[in-house]
Amino acid sequence: MGNSKSGALSKEILEDLKMNTRYSEEELCKWYESFKKQCPDGKITRPDFEKIYANFFPNSDPKTYARHVFRSFDTNDDGTLDFREYIIALHLTSSGKTSLKLEWAFSLFDVDRNGEVSKVEVLEIITAIFKMIPPEEQKNLPDDENSPQKRTDKLWAYFKKREHDKIAEGEFIQGVMMNDEIMKLIQYDPKK
Ligand SMILES: [Ca+2]
Ligand SMILES: [Ca+2]
Image (cartoon, rainbow, N blue to C red; front, side, top):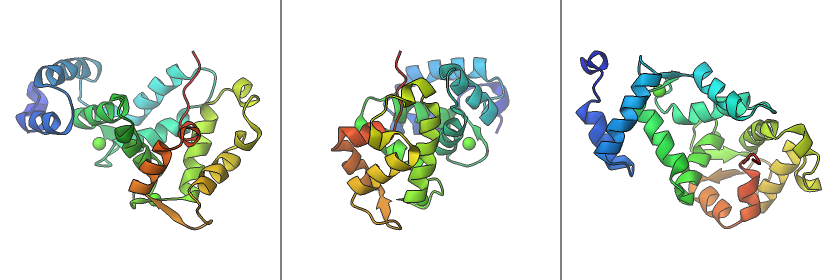
């Protein structure tokens, strides 16, 4: 408990992160220093997080997506991201390893955290992703991908699911990994 005031990274969290991410002790301590500088109270709030996203997407509306991403990172569901959650997020999203990224993507799509993804959940996330695409770019999308509903239908059809079926995590990761087109549907990389 005393750790929160002294500003040091607790041994317990350090060991946990060393075991569960690819980062070394040295790297983690460095991350922690800069995290503390930016968030002196040791927590990132949802509005802070949404602001970061807004800076990256000045020509579209990333707010809903940011809210879902925040939820997927806030694993203890307390409304803030602490250092541990922040590092795990970084580890999952920036590793370059597709299976890790898709593991995270699954948690993003599993809005109610029940371990499976429904079509309603897919539509919810794809709608949020769609809002990040600037209107100019939306005009140039292929005919079967130019609305959230069409994109959701396409993904659902690819997984050969009926309306009320569900997708499990392993099935999701494997399916998306095998198809680049589906991979593109579940994310948005802004053109630089
Ligand atoms: Ca949290
Ligand atoms: Ca679910």
